[in-house]
Length: 106
Image 1 (tube, rainbow, N blue to C red):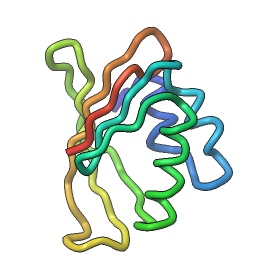
Image 2: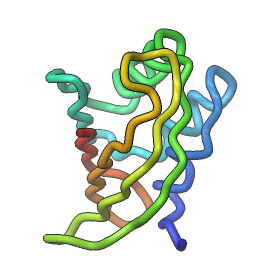
Image 3: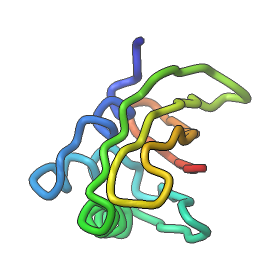
């Protein structure tokens, strides 16, 4: 499956060493919606990502990617230290060029 470069970065980044590379994949005004909260801007997104990785020690393996309403929708198998693991989650990415503008995880 072909994933655009910033989405590939999102799924292949390893915590904590790749936190800066992950943040660089997002636009300055990017927003992530996850678990009922919003995180805006690369630094806040980096902090959220590192905290989630430390808390859940999870990995997400993309299974399928489609385009819908101008977004890239990736279904991924997520395994980690959380109830219901493993789970299939949907990651809906908005892109602008080679950066992520928004991400909704559900």
